[in-house]
Length: 612
Image (tube, rainbow, N blue to C red; front, side, top):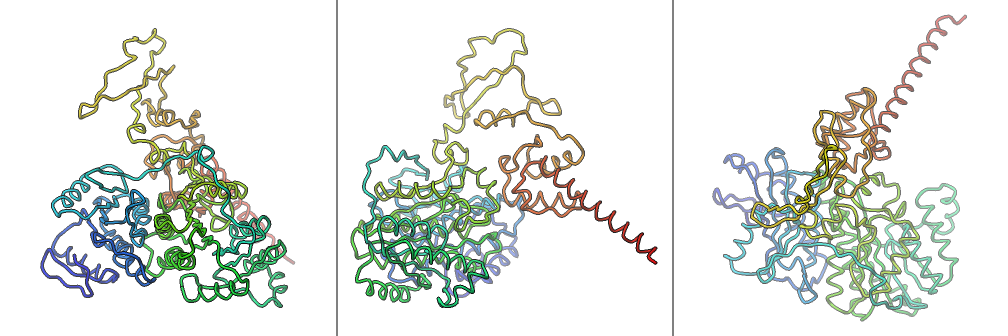
């Protein structure tokens, strides 16, 4: 399938489509269906090309998205209609999309794809996605690599080949106190630009710079503030605008200088004009940029449009490029990017946000490679009840995945600790003991621990010769096996060995005696959870998200509970009370309320019939 302007079928095996035209993908799909073809694998090669060089304007960035993330989104939405029983392998093949060292050029415009690819399997489990970075090599060599990747069942979502070696992405745990330290990169009386400056996190950083460095701060945001004469009226009305006015007033009392300007940071000329006017009035130049601006909207990828995707992408995609132009020719200027761990992990219903942040991670890497700016990229889990995490309803799900909420004091301390070391990309707020995180920090062999459980049932001691069992895998490679003696084997209700409880114990999770359902309501809820989660044994105090639940499965559970009990249960309730015991208790309260209302109505009608 070639990239072009108009849908054209040259022959049964050769098509031309426009990369960003939804209707042409539909035409392609319908043509393949008419030929009785079922798609089992898609190889996307439109980004396998020579290094494009420096990006001269935002239009180039946007053009790359048409052949990258927009085309992949349309592929997903078009071919995602196939039955879940028919798995699809999606292999995105690109060149210069990953840099394994500081000498390799990186085409950061392609980096939005990474966050999208990691989100797809979380929303559509029958899709298996991989990002393959290949150096430009002979047709035979790279064709063989692509064919091999289509047959490898490993869960590696990012793969790169260099000098014949296969590399996969991972995380390295850092011990900051052991690394060389440096002074904080802020300058007393320095001039700094903060995008998203009147957001919750931006205000806290601004406070710190004003109080400790008497800085000059230019805060940029999307929302225009009303004329100062009308502020009192807005403050009395309350709301988000009142919060921004209050924050701005507080900052103006802290020393230093602070100015807020409303501007679209995606437009270079408008930003340059605002910045130049402010700097001229202050008779100074920018010492640094702190890029916080961003937008998160929860939406399934199947429901995304190019417009809604661009709305989330642009503050990071175009905004970071625009802000970079302000300081790129000022050596040693500070540039701090606030990213999200979703850029690395993806996330259900936040695919666009994940894509925006995977771009930001790559762009910061490009900045460090250029060597002129001190560029930091801090990818956060979530600042607890601050910024975009304010009012977030899925904390239980996030914590179950190993994404911990960061308190304000922890966030500021983490920021300052990071800035006391050499510029780098850091993730903050991960639970290193969580299996979802460990699979990126630990070699896969270490995660696949073979454990043999046994019990003598009180009939003597085990044979010591079993202490070192000889075990080999399917290809004859020696494997280690840990022996664990138990007083007795845990059993399910049917008398079978409870392997899930043994697995929880082996993973180091806190295991407590599983409490069985105590009444019919809990038994019905347990049955629903078992069917949706695919888990054979569930206790009434087991956490839905720890058992493997996510927002999509939560929606299914809530829907089935509503049908089973003829009661409309809110999704938020499951996030706040993610156990069978709590849900059952809430259902009973709802039933009691309905009974009370029915009784009240009956009694009222009875009395009204005898009014004199």
